[in-house]
Length: 200
Length: 424
Image (tube, rainbow over all chains, first blue to last red; front, side):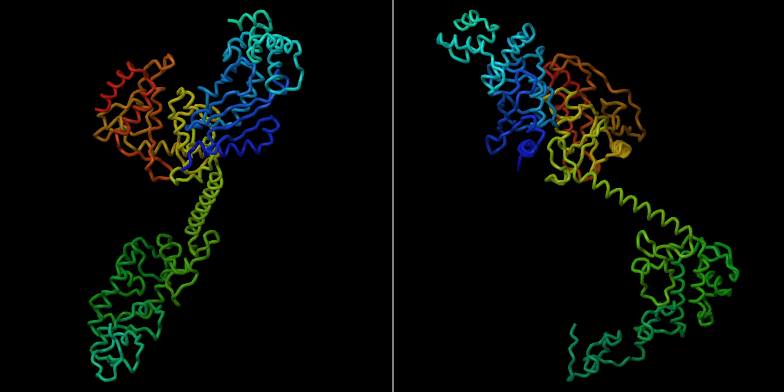
């Protein structure tokens, strides 16, 4: 007998693949295995946000108890966002935790994630550093987020040449590309502080 | 039966088939085709239908088409008449006719008085029945029926059942009334003279048609509805027993019974999450099982109330006719009846606080309103309603799973002792 989870994912998959609304929102879904337990999602960064133009890959794991429990979702693409870990991609979103409802679908989850990108919740953070930056130095946060979108999410919009050169500076010193960027992003793009943290 | 024609042996007994007029072998028959004089009286009896005037076989009839002659058959006929007439219960019949001699109600409750009503003569059952005027019998009986036209009590019985169903009657002179065709049910069941019967029938017919239409609409409404949780069309679920809706009291979102119950008994989330509709998060206290889906608010309320009424006829498993305590008190849907049969008046549900696993104070009654979903078991055959089996142990296990799994140890010990008292 087909489990309720598998049967439902099959239905949802069809719905997401065929829906015009979702292609308009740049939402995609892809199967990774035959038993419908692992999928790859993709959402486009919402317009008028630092994530605009970027494409974000998501890892979706369907538990056996789905839809009575939420799918496990994580960002594969690196992102600078208060509610998403810049290290692991873990997401802090209530509906993926204690506010889940059995009637929610992969479609609503992906749309919610897109909405989360547009409206971060710094008071309920996943990444404390990012959330702090968002609250205390929003200008730099926006620039950093846009820079990350540019580098990791493949956006072709407005690059931050200033940040690029700072990262290059650190790479030239022998530091890892990503680690340098994280260090700089976490220290408001202050090169000295970043180098200090990297040495520690 | 050996009924082979054989020319060699002489005919012995009379052929039974010949006597019934159905022997296929004619003169070649092994058995005698002579009718013995004495046998005629035994095998042939007077045709009942002939006496009523409507024998279908006419001259071909195997039974005698004669009026009884000797005293022996007279007695038989006599008792036949009595039996026949006592079967016709004209107890309340009214004779309002001018030609009738007798008009009192009880006067035609016996065969004798019936005869009197028809002929105006006294019927003496000891008298030789040849003296009675039987020729007018059939005719007057029909007339009598016609006179009955406006006394509605028995009119429905008197409609010819053959004509009513098939629109044709096998009897050439049927003594029953051939009704008019009802254009709704297509049966000849409208009494030609009885306006009251016609009206009643029309009303019933219309009502039945309405019911059928309502059901057709209900089927149309329900057959394509998908469940919001498993997303399958509820009526197309694999197991026939799963093809039921779980109707929520406070919103109109559609789920199959199995899914909504599983969601509501989920232990992974707070009570206010799982007791709410998974679509709109509006809280409902209980789920009503139903075969059909209802769009209309009034119909929905009706089915919910019917369900509650139905539960109210089942004895509460906690109350146990006064031996136990029902934690739901007067909010319980089940029947609280004492051993003497009187209905017990219970207080409000016990409201006790406890600390939940999130560290918040929570009302005990919030916790136990899970009990409203207890009417949940798989082996019910009813379409509309669940009927639970009387298994207290299952109840105990269910309660334990649903009520106590999210308590910590100290809470559990406290509840366990309460529970022990509750179930022992």
